[in-house]
Amino acid sequence: MHTGELKIPTEGRPIEAFFMCREEKPERAFLILPGKGYTINHFVLDFLWRMAAECGFYSLKAEYRGYTYRHLGEPYDHHYAAADAGYVLDYLNEMGYQPDKITVCGKSLGTIAVGSLVAERGVVFERAVLLTPVLYMKKEKGVFSQWAEFNNKISKPYLIFGSCDPFCDRDTACQVFPKGLIECYPGADHGLFIDNDYLSTIEIQRKIIENVKQFLSEPL
Image (cartoon, rainbow, N blue to C red; front, top):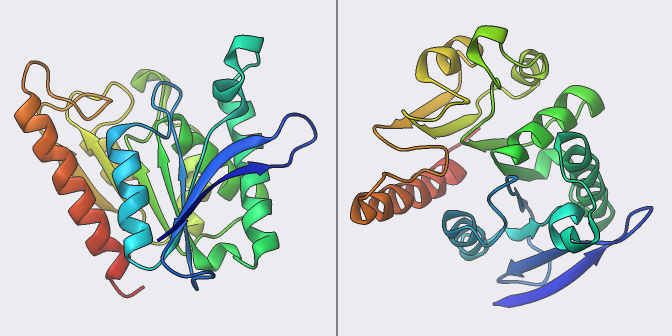
């Protein structure tokens, strides 16, 4: 297995990322974008990264500059996350991976970055996995506008979240993504954890990895 660290160039400080792949240049890529409170070392993200590499993808997980350089006070809200995701996508394009050969997996803030790439840049990924998607900040204020455009371009996204997630719920997810694959874990929070029940939490993570692996193998 080939692994390594990357410094993806930007107009400022580089983006730190890590790749893993079985062969030198796989046909397809798997991109992981983390959340604001969930870096690329988050348990499920790290195992999804490894699983994708084992399945034959060029697997890449990329941090936001605000995480990597947070001691310098650099920001990492959704605007910066979307900009950083754009730099990572440009890097993959230069490697020869066009969006129709990329499966993107966003976690929390990463789903906002993914939504922005699709809505604002017109990017159409091969597949999209939305882990704990941020559909809204407050449900009464409505769903973020980019999800309508995202839904027009991505025919079958895979949404994964818990029933105690404050930024997503099953009814809204089904309304916004009528053709999407929806998976909601009872009792799980925004981190996909169940309070005071580590065994159930680990089982959720295991199921997610297995189900995403299955999703990657399904015909489009």
